[in-house]
Image 1: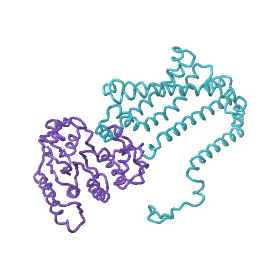
Image 2: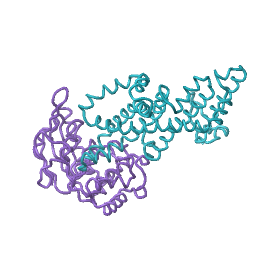
Image 3: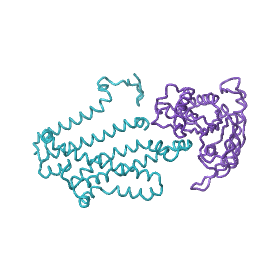
Image 4: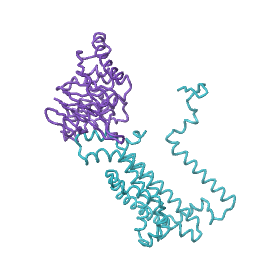
Length: 254
Length: 275
């Protein structure tokens, strides 16, 4: 589905060149949930931008369905750290924004948008404006917008990191529920090990500067997962401590 | 009812007493300035009467009102002239300023070529140019419009440039990730985002526009409220000058609040979003 082959990224800055990514390769299968974790500055967000086609890599290629990505694709959508809602548009109009740029059928997009808002627990807020919503609700709207065009690939760049801890947990649970109903391959960037364990099929652990793949950890806990459930506690804790170990290890080595 | 702890650590009942709750906050916004205005006029009337100040120095408010009533038709005609100059000048300034601002915001080289010069020219006192405009362009409408444009142009350009630049990068990324072309990105995202900022410039510009037309009328005109002020100054009819000034003030304030209302109507989201 997604094939990432030998991606390197070098940025030129005033104080010289910065290697953000070095020879990163991995695949994501259709409908797989892959999470990229690592310390700040390990290039995870950069990789996400490369996959989306917003940024051209210095070396390497990204292929989606065997096709090299050179520019943003219609079937790939991006969800940002900030909700990135247009303040002059109502919730529904925001969710329907992709229809205008991608020239989708208005009528069916509208129905799809309403269904998604319903699924995200935003029924009754369609005609509200972003400033009337809490941060968590804004990010739900953003998620609906990212899903409205039924993307094959959804790229999520620390989507919950600006929210408070409780809202964050609530939203990651919601995300798990929502994506269970969608068939989308997801590449998710986070700093949170809990989020990674809750959501992912596989977790790609990055080492920083230059960003390289340190290890790919499969999470084999059956879904739906619940961080609070006693039955799953042991399995989840195993994965969690494994990831903690990997990330801590790097710190000591550095 | 809510109890807030004060700095001294004492609890204070925070419900305002009845006399402070009336009138409502919205009414206060209108009523309190009116009260101040009435007070100023009363003091003005009192002082001119008590000190017996000659009318050619400071006319009493009653005599100004009398002039307004006596010459209302003439004064309204002059007001229409000044209003026309202001309005047309403002429109021309928008028509020139906004496209130039777009070009500056989009082309780095152009910005480096033009922006410093614009800012330098902006610091030249435009009043100094007014007599020369008469030499170049005569006594008709043109020098007035040019003067208004000169004054309004800069705040419009500066605010539009900063508005267009302030688009959050995630919105630009969003548009790009949705394969938006440059025109769509501009119309649907950047320009819309810049509108509240552009309105800041317009609100600055509208008061300057009135000043511009009055300056232009001072140096060479046969009509307009600025012309009335110069004429009545020459004939020591200070009350008439005050009447013209009053109308200018009312016009200026009305134009400003017209823009405020337009902004509220066009951009209801902007107020809440600006934090």
